[in-house]
Amino acid sequence: MPRPAPERNGESRAKARPAPKRKPLSPEEKKRRAEAARLEKERRAQEKLLRRARRRALFIASLATALVFVVLYYVFVGVSIATRPDGREDALPVVIYRGTASKEEARLEVEEVYFKGNYYLPLTVLEPYVAVTEFGDHSTRSFSLSDGGYATFYLNSCDALICGVRVSLEGESFVKDNVLYLPADFYRDKMNCFTFEKSTALAAWVFTFREEVTPAFRMAAQSPAERIPYQPAYDQTPVTPPQA
Image (cartoon, rainbow, N blue to C red; front, side, top):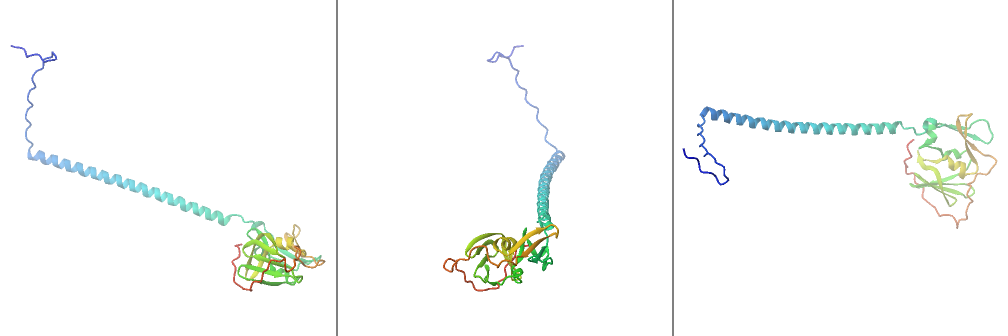
């Protein structure tokens, strides 16, 4: 039997045999395969929908968790602000004395004198001791003494003018129920006839009128030419006080 001719590379190869012809699919097999393909397509579609639903559920859960944390944070901040100590728990009432008298003339409770961490006294406390003339408008309140000295207070501000001299008080002056409230340091440091001292024995702050001196401002009264002019019309426009 003759040998096959050698290939160019020196190797001999047998001729490929023709593949057997596939039998045509029966109608039942075609139907079965079509059904399997349809089911596979539906399965993939369901898996895709399930993945989307899971991602949506995860997003909603994350958003809800974030909202819960935000709400809890603001609740915490609100509670902290509401319960934050403002010094009132240690604040004391104010008792008013005249000179060396041993009997108090008036007593003001904490809620009447303690605002925003400062002690205040209404201008009405001067009435029994000092003759004052009060005037003002919607942004300022002023009063003058019999010697011609005057003080002007810029409402809701620490700024003031005393006999034309600009000063800064320890707290903002304000109007409450149409009464001017001034920080206690004004009476203690800017007037010569009052003292304001803490008394451990009385468990109170003591506001005392010094009878031995003529009421005046500690700033020297200036001449009319030197004073800062101020002639407002009196207007009882309500002014919002600081919250206690």
